[in-house]
Amino acid sequence: MDILEKGLSKGELNSVCQAVGGIDKLIDENSKDYFEIKYLLDNAKPDKLTENPKLYKTPIVRNGKQATVGYQPDVWKGWE
Image (cartoon, rainbow, N blue to C red; front, side, top):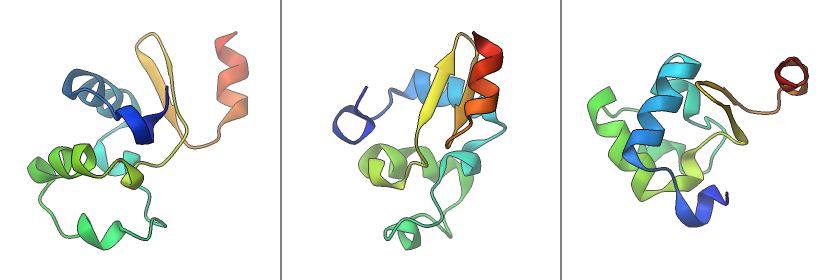
């Protein structure tokens, strides 16, 4: 799925957050737009991610209830 075009639904976002250990793991600190989210409270971050999907660290890969953020081929091999 093209995250920049479609983003994540609230349910999907919550599920991925739980799988990876929190919303901050989803945020790309190297994004040129990082300043938009850096100082927000955790409860405001989901709305900002929905508003600006360029803030996501990618790829976000799901396998059932498991998920990874960023390039992690060693983890993905274990899923096969």
